[in-house]
Image (cartoon, rainbow, N blue to C red):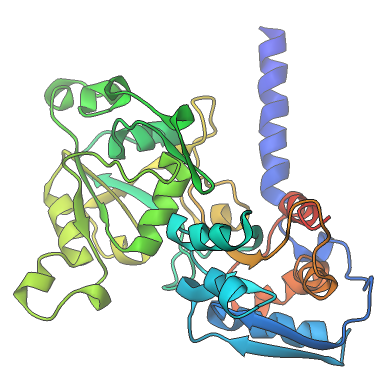
Length: 358
């Protein structure tokens, strides 16, 4: 018993320490390794002004550098810019899709290098908001593991994607499907009731969900009801039927339903309840709050990325590497704070991403 208590204490302290490492002032200061001159070509998303903020900060150390930006393609054209336009850097506000990386692979026979540069937002539109899991307020459920979320919304599959290759390694059978509330431990009137699933259809959102939980598989629960934000619907009544507001309205009346989406919309519906999430059954089960997105203790966050053309076993272009070193430095992560769109990365994540540049 004593060992168990001590073990739990150390686990709690570790979680607390992890949750505190988020102040960019704690990161190592930027020290140039090479002097950068000439042009750096950037193609992709401007990340709500964040890319230009980083460029401005970088120029303080490298005044002779010139940035050639093309943000017209946004995230959808970011990786394409690496192989079609000779871009050095490809910032993206969405997770790369299989259709993004496959053409790159066909050209180079390896995959683009992905670097996380910021933690996504909490509730602001367009800031890679964290994914919230919701039920009706009359549903007694309070918490789920990420595996349970995957088994509720997902379905049996023959495999999943590992980069640009499909493999049976990620196959799973129908026995893992969670289709009734009783399978989650609910009793009484909920025990045998089927779980009705709701969620989004827009590719950027869906790919984040599929990548995190399905290994990019497109196999969803057969009763999944899809909706989109109002800006993506066709004008008129047929579009209104699939606007995301309809999803929250339905769930507000459906105590046997469950949905995923952004807190920026769900907060307007008082009959909905948020579910705490954990990576595993061991916990901790973490609520979606701004602080828990900032410190990355909430499991269902999203990241902003830069993609680079780096041939395995060979060094990265020195200009691109130097810029990424700046972005992942104390100064670069502090550049995130004035705009207030994303959150700086904690030290352990910065260290992990810097290793990818070596």
